[in-house]
Length: 385
Image (cartoon, rainbow, N blue to C red; front, side, top):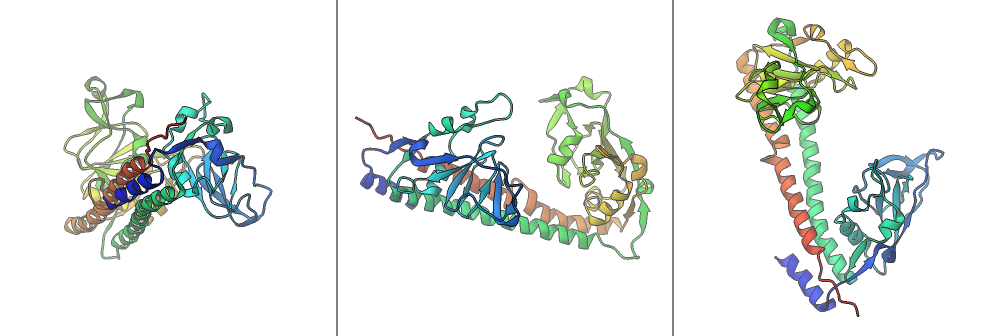
């Protein structure tokens, strides 16, 4: 490809004998972060190991830098080219720009296996001493800048796709609210009138196996499942499955305990071909409506307002099956429910399908970026006398 040819030509011209490698300490100075809590609110971002925490009225550094978490998410690097402050769990770097182009250093450091530098048994941690020993390939600046130009093209496209995905998901939510808002012409019924609510079983995480009877743990409802699913993540052996509660195809599986009111009652429609064993802290909703329509409704603003009134608890938030029966559900004709679901399926495929749509496109572009990053940042080492 043209991009590879351009790099090869530059390397052949500027470093035909290979590329010199230097310790990180030769290309930058690593500085500690400091507390920000005594500062006033302002416009300068404060970075922690997870990203921007807040904004304050002063900055610690105003030149391009690579931020490296000192503790916690040690591989979660940031490139920052605006004035900023950073807390004490993050290092910042004063880069020697006559040696290395700042954005090049960022891309190169994202290829480093920081887990090998971890010096702690609990929370992952890095030290300045360990980081200073990291070996960095330092080709001529012209090569560095060309590599940055190419990789920026990939990351820019990924950023655009991710921004479009966010916009599409927001559009989906708005459209969902519109489609699930009904007038007086649509009958309302309590959930108890249209469904049987069954408590989940006693399945535990340590019961999981690689094969066997498909199962759903309530924690997975928060982290994995969307509006509906045909596949599970985990299985349980047949002996353990005998005494479990099962969701049938078409049932809804709802998490009825959570740490927050926002998460409690998150659910999905099980539309697979076989029954699945279900863990505790759940409700299995067996009904006579369109399962995907009901799942969409249980993610709507109207339902969220109702569940807030029924949720109770402090450390653990719960909505009991008996209380769930009181929820009022709009019940349009089944053919109307199916029509609404058809529209939702198109949006869902665009926004969430890992094999097609924007999610698949983003995944493919990230793989492409990682491939070229590794290829472009792998050099023949220059022999030293």
